[in-house]
Image (tube, rainbow, N blue to C red):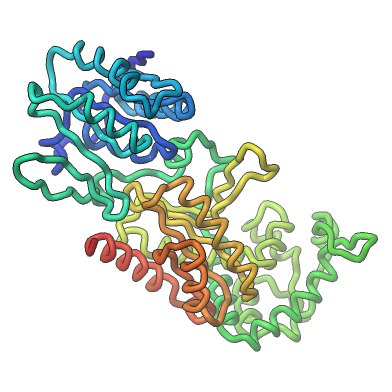
Length: 432
């Protein structure tokens, strides 16, 4: 199958990769198409031809990737199907060799990051030829975030894929995997000053308990109750507009912040009508959700935003709702950002319950690896008093020491903590 597209490419014109760019690039499509996207963006000359070698299992990924790269300026893309013969040396040779023989001009390259090991070996053997000494063989090292170029004569230093060389938007990252976001993620934190006051309170277990005691009063007034005694949905907009909740038992930091936001009326009550008048939330139930724990996600978002430029982030946002076949609600990243093509996913929870914290981090870890491959990094921000112990326990369970856990004591210093996490990630990659 051959796809032709017109248009200008957005590929980098001058970089350390220029000397290794080729006119005909063969890519092996594996379970995760992200490395293929990176290789195509970095190693294909403008106007070159891309060959996506796939199996029946990865045909959909190959077709989708061809559409994305075509839209970005790759003019000619050929899909080469191995069908079910990804480990069959003869079939691989018979599929790829005719394409090689048809190439009369231009340089050739093979990036063998994707596909099975057998598929990589047999494709390498097919493409390699003493008659084509300028063929460029390469693979993307996910641990070092470097592109490795093969050389039989002199060693070539792997090239670091720096964040500024290939910035990838979060929406693009999901598109590469054939997923479309349900809604545009937000980059604007709601009530960031009030969220910071909550973070200050939650640093102290006694003050946090004081908040929850008051919140129980708020919940009694704002939520419906089911026949079995469980809590139901929030009450109607009309009913919520009538609520004014006494603030006597509220921690002083939050009371002061409520007053600063002009949410408090003269008899020292939180007025949801005043909250509505500020137009921060389209519906009052969204403010109720914010009080119910979403404040921490907004606090984390604001902390990420504060270090966006200095940490060379390409994109950031909150509330990435992604539909997923086989599930009712799909899945969601609470807060995420990219540096280059590397995904950083942050799971957020106001709980200190160890079991719940582990569950949140496990889900984020699995989804982040699914979307960002081995390069993805994951953190949990929660209210545990033992973040180091929790991190060590989970790291052993998933055999990955690169995860991070930030606890109660970190809440007011998250910008510097996240920045240190990023720097440590860079340091670990450089040390390997």
